[in-house]
Length: 93
Image (tube, rainbow, N blue to C red):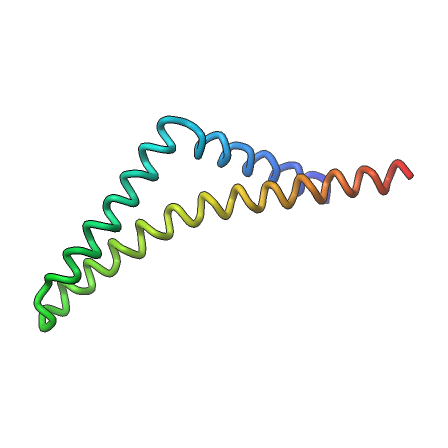
């Protein structure tokens, strides 16, 4: 159990470092820009063009999911770190 908590905490810390890095900020900014562009194109696409609508919807989902998953990893890492700290505290009592 400790190994899983430590691994999740380490991944979460790496996600945090990525989010705080210039590279992470740039990539997340690109994903947000792609989402905005796809949403705008979706507003203009011919409502009868099902293939284009599906492609634009997938671009929106990908851009949103990319950001959400990194933030989720960070959150899981924080939760795992707190659980590990609590577990160590209980073990020392």
